[in-house]
Image (cartoon, rainbow, N blue to C red; front, side, top):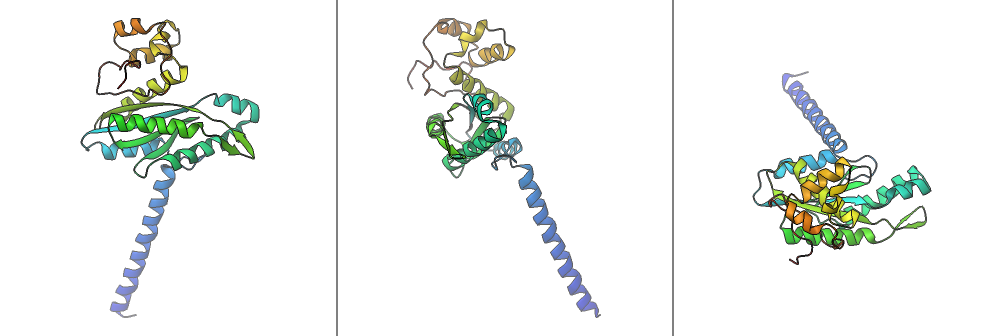
Length: 237
């Protein structure tokens, strides 16, 4: 074999090997950032999105979604059926998400929607739209299932830690789920309730004023890491 032909064969093989390796790496990356059960993104995908956006200007937002009474579905129909319900919910989130947004499953029946760069008004609008989309029944194995979800949101500067962003969204999601202002949980002995009450309402005077008040409006999804006190849900924006 001539040296020219040998060089050509070596070049082709090397290029082919690089192509195969690159394709394998792409498939591996996709698998590592995809939730195996639902096919949407996972927590690793969310972490990657936050890292990529960390040098952006302005605020980034995230929605936290927790399904209501999902345990009843599992207890009634079994876990395999419950898993298919999670898949249907994930599909609903994916079809409702805008092209620049990314739905992910964090764990169990808890999901998140990465909004990217946004404003408070835009994030609040998307939270309401997502809650409305989740209220539409899904069909699983020929059965009509109503799976509502509690939605919380948080905004923060793009460089803020993702853990803080998720904690703020989770706190307000929990406030929506309980159907009342979180400060009312101040007397609870659960450590989670006490932590969330402090996170959502650090102002003791505001907390005292809210105790025993009417339930928080279910359409209010307001949280921001850029403010030191939580906004009053009874105050219109």
